[in-house]
Length: 124
Image (cartoon, rainbow, N blue to C red; front, top):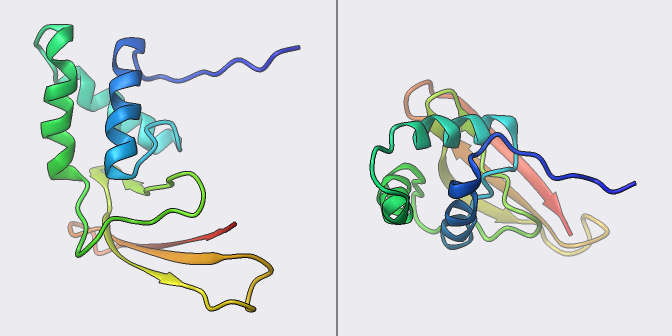
């Protein structure tokens, strides 16, 4: 039995999103909230398929905001989303050696509209 990868993101948009995500630090398939955001965004595109990547690049550069630097993920990117889109990355706290068995970091995110915060922990 083989596992089948499944996503709601249209096939023509998945590769460009994965490429842009590798640059910015997100995974478009990391959560249902992420997939919903990208599906809604792609529905707004009205151009030809060969212009999709450029259009996505422009749209996403403005939506994935960081106070200073982008996350330095230990594992796969897990950028959190609210119903309005990606949260703003506030910063990263690298845990001193010895507190966890392996390398660990906390990632802090904030939503400007709702005031919600989310902290993620990744352990290598």
